[in-house]
Length: 64
Image (cartoon, rainbow, N blue to C red; front, side):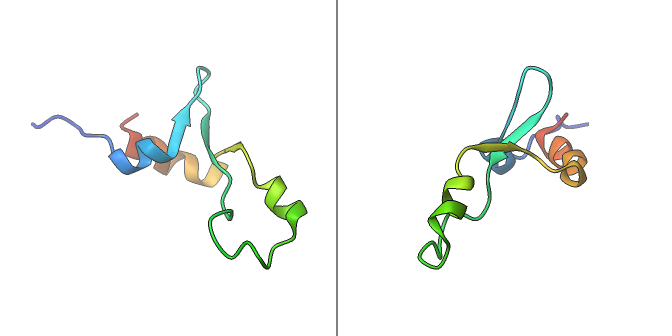
């Protein structure tokens, strides 16, 4: 049986903390920024924990 490979794209998008939490960049800050208020774009900076609904899928893609 071949070795299990982790999804390289997912590895570049998320990062695991020491406690096992999955952190990712906040979504919605790549384009169409002119129409969004600056307060909203400031809120979107930094990293957030991945939603509970997506955790299982992300962990599977990371090979964990």
